[in-house]
Length: 569
Image (cartoon, rainbow, N blue to C red):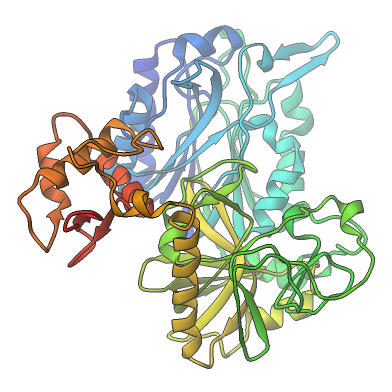
């Protein structure tokens, strides 16, 4: 059970007063036992296109603005999750404006940031006309965050009219959707409750929406009526248009009960209509097969330009090359528009963890190569089962990452569930994972299409060698012997430093080169101290990782001690 509070806040023209009022209400809700507190859309400013620029702030976890600093303090002091309504955000690099919601955990950590996807552009003759797009830019990614009670999706106001957000959130395992919103007195009585109940019953999840209180003297009259709806579409808490706090007890067991009683989750017909939550990159893959009506297959025979392959028990593992299935069949990918070149790259989890977070459909690159699919080996440390997916925490000695296996229409609901619940995939057991690295809510995970238990531990060693071999081929293979063995000339000048070198990378190489000779290398803490006046610690760590990956440095006695590749040449 989780206690939720919606703060229907009276919002005025003075930002400082709005923040002070919000703080008082959040702490009041926390004192009353709330564990998650929601603020309304534009809680720090009046709502209107002419106000967005005036009240806008940058949102940067390393340098908080006035409103985000206040939200962090509310969460930390109240020891609650705070869904910070929304504020006008000014993007620091472009100056563009967004309507943005931030989410904070009880430690005061920013755990999610959602930019309103669908801008409120309407024209109801004789009633209301409004165009957010005259001032605001739309966001470009879906957002959810994780709590001890489950995952929750986030949308802002007009987003709730688009069922796809809640559908995707539910299919990805979310138990609830939260919408800070500010419907008006025209659209509110027509659609506010109707939309919330529709999102709840369609996806069998909790749905909550938090509005500002109505101010009849303001230019924009909010509808109010902050509301919580359960997975059966029953309104379990609501209010009128006046300021106040709405409380609701959220029984998360109800989500599973409703989904078991009316199992639409497992009865969908993705053979007839598309799954909005499915990744289109995978619709022409056959996992573990040997041909058929697919362009590419995992574990399939045949193969084009592989770096090398290893066959263990009938499982053909491609060493990071291009894969063609060994079977025939119609090339239906031309109709479905899938990728014609899919890579299956053997990796370590450390390589996945170090990939920079991207948004939308931006490609993932490892060692400078665009990667679609990855495979890795690791030990299962934890398993969390939900109605539509299982999340495995997998560790390989270089790092740890969450791996999610979803039920979908690709291989059949029953077959997918059987694989998810395979008893041989258990805590403490080694597994091989095939899937794609995904970014959601500033976190990394792997969406798996196949997970199988490892029975021969030689496969673990072989995968490590394979991943290392491919990494070295991609990073050092093309380089000449002189470039690898002698990055410095005889007089100490660097050779080829224009190839990706930056001031911080050059400074690190200089620091190591000029350090007293030591077979144990140079501690990165000493490098950080010597360069403290010129570069930030994070810059130095990132640059050192790049130098290691490019072959300029290597680690010695541990990951903190570095040595140049030519140190003892």
